[in-house]
Length: 204
Image: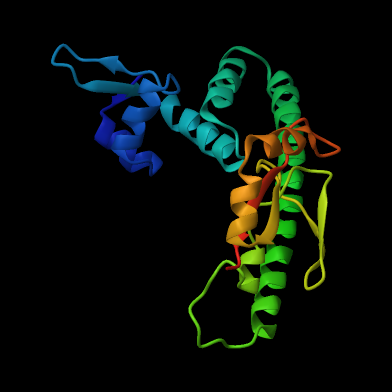
């Protein structure tokens, strides 16, 4: 069987030599070595690279591609088909989940733009009471904040809930007393054990 140097394989496959070296390190593309240390590839390396490229196009991670290559190299086509189908179905579910998240994020961006367009132009400096700061961290899933200017806003996962209050300096000093910490820590959202975290802004 004739062999190719890495530059020749890169030219035939259209895959850069740096990527070929990376694939070898990742265990996807084995290579023999000459006594001088040059990489040598068989003719089947072109087909192997085509298979890797197709799997990457389907969004499979390198770890799964390595597993699939083992099946492709040692098993019948029907087994490769069955293995690949299961992985692709899993990718569909993940893609659909991401599409829902992206659609929700896109809708929130449109809502933010609409809200900003409706705000008056102020000549003063921005402060914590600026209406556009309402688009901040959201509490956990299953909880919504009803804001008169935004409607019922779904809450973003992964962030501790915040309760915004407008307090005077005197009230802030009063509520910073340790006696206030226990009642707040006991308040929890319906869908998580994370405590509410009050945020106080000074109005004075």
